[in-house]
Image 1 (cartoon, rainbow, N blue to C red):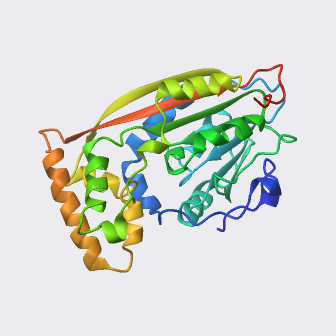
Image 2: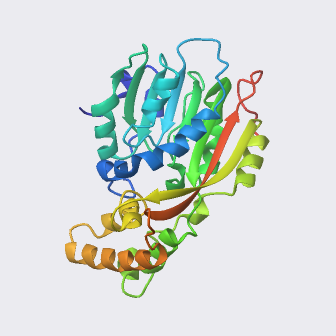
Length: 303
């Protein structure tokens, strides 16, 4: 099924769905979902800390920024069965799978739709505010994403919540080795900078200060998950669904180069993450935030 259009979604207006920008990587939803259990757990932890919206109306309206293949978007429908939920993403591959599996009426009387949109250009309409705007492991791909928080909060109803989680493990061997290899003499002409996103993600205290400055009551925390991965070259298999995607996209069409790069990266990962008796331990730090907009304030003041 094709991605939903603005007219298909009750919680979407044309101003919210500008043409999607070219994604930084070509995504493989099924590779991404190979580790769905570990990837879903942080969203469940975030979901547990999101307070109930105080809109006083039904149904609730929810936006999911960077919805990916829709598997966590569906968890929103489990908690709020009659909500009108719209998932936004730039990846045609992700949207196709999300639409195929989840789009349409939900068993609780709500609805899920999936729309192509670029987070750097997406602006919710304050005249049709959302009760919840959520983003799961997506904002690290959005340069300057803290600068968009004000407009997203303006698109929340009073008492609504903006909640997100982002990885903060860019100094881990999985990412540091990838960045070093991309910037090495053998690969820099084709891949320099392809793996560096560390500067895009703030520290928890910085997110807390920013969200409080914007008038929210913010709950911010971080967690390091000790993920136990199984299978041969398990960390490489994990990165093929996320961090390695921009590299594979840049080398697309040159299988010899893909094989050579992947082999070098695999060998480095084997040394950094030796398997143990029960699998490969892959520590993964993530940052979480749930920021509630004041009930008495319909629009945040411009500072």
